[in-house]
Amino acid sequence: QQPVQSPQAVILREGEDAVINCSSSKALYSVHWYRQKHGEAPVFLMILLKGGEQKGHEKISASFNEKKQQSSLYLTASQLSYSGTYFCGTDLREMTDKLIFGTGTRLQVFP
Amino acid sequence: GAVVSQHPSWVICKSGTSVKIECRSLDFQATTMFWYRQFPKQSLMLMATSNEGSKATYEQGVEKDKFLINHASLTLSTLTVTSAHPEDSSFYICSAEDRVSSYEQYFGPGTRLTVT
Image (tube, rainbow over all chains, first blue to last red; front, side, top):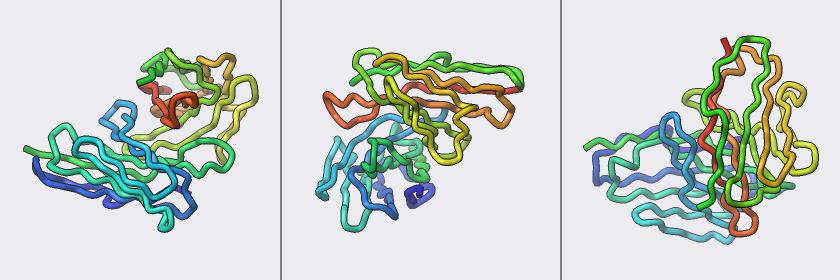
C-alpha cells in the first residue's frame, strides 16, 4: 500500500521552515527522500536506514521512526530552489530493494 | 554520483504501434533496474523490477505482455510498450541501483510518451 504523505501541499515564504511527513502501514527497512521539479526526474536527497536515525544535508534533514513506521523531512530557512514535489520512497526489503513512493507533497517557496 | 540515461527523452507515436525505451547505467553496473510510470500531478508508480539475465517481476495490475522488459546486460534495460493506446501516454522513468557503493537508486531523466 502506498505511503501517505502530509501535508499534500505547502506554500512558504523564503526563509520559512516546513516539515513533510511520510507514514507507512508496513514495516520499513529504509526511507529514501526525493525532490522532483516539474517535467524532470526525481533528485535524491537522502536515505535513512532501519535503526531510527537522523540525517542532515545542509538545511534539509530527516528522521526515521522505525516503530511508528514514519519518516519526516525538515526544511529549514527555505530557499526558492526548494520548490518542487517531495516524495518519500519506502523500502520494505521483502524480496528486492524496490521502492514504493508516497503520495507526494508539493512545496512552493515564494520570495 | 552515478549517471543513468534514458532514450528517447520524448516520443510521439500513433495508436497501435510499439515504442521501445532504453535505460542505461553509464558508469556502474546495475543488476537490478526499476521502471516507473508517472501521470500528471501523481506519484511515481512502480511498474516492474528488471533483473539482468532473468525475467522481470511485474507489480500487480501491470500487464507483462503489454509492457515488455528486457535486461540484456548489466548496463541496459529496455521497456517496450506494445500496441500503445492514448491511455498509455505518461512519463516513464527508470532507476538503477548501484549495490557496490550504496543503497541509493539513481534515476534516469525520464521519457515522455504521447500516443495519438
